[in-house]
Image (cartoon, rainbow, N blue to C red; front, side):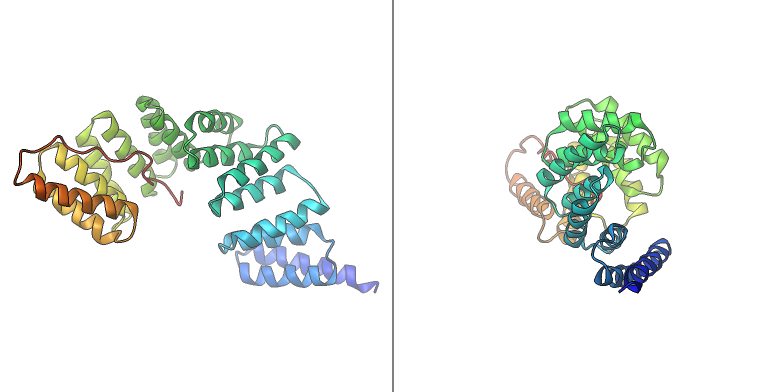
Length: 281
């Protein structure tokens, strides 16, 4: 019996090595072996939760963080569980976890950022803006923080601030198409059609065959009275998203244009708010 805790520690150390090497399946095996020997090793739950998260097993991440919290409560564990709940599309549960994280550490940056993301998921831009302001002020802000804050500013029709944040996100991560998609939508909402079209083009250069730039191009081209280009853009969006909301909207617009061709043209349609311009975001 005396050897079991030592063996559990060794398996935990092996798991940490594999996790550092980004060999997540082996990390999961090692951490599991540790917990089979000693289910009280908090570090093994922590490491396995991280490995599960990296492999997209978000419910398993929640489960391991729950066990970790029973052994060793911490702001970090609550925040990590909140992030997993967010990825499971459970934003209110995520907010509850982030609240608990911040009760333990009022300066926990990732909890403010994550809570801001969750508020945006719930279409609550004002509290999202407050949380993201705090996260960015604390420091070590990432491009995704600026993208979410730009979305909050855009939802509040504060377009200059939204454009500034989208630009910061692009400068931090110029190879990520999400920043250009977001800035394109913001330019469109502000009425800067040429700039919006340019950012759509850049987004497609970085990530071809993405739905949103084609979908938005349809609205841009329609406002510019380039009906044939609008049709081509919406046809491509419908092809790329046969079952999704943007594809459905594109098909509705195509039918509307077909009807309008035989009747006096109504004013151009406006795209719905809250389009998914970000990552999986």
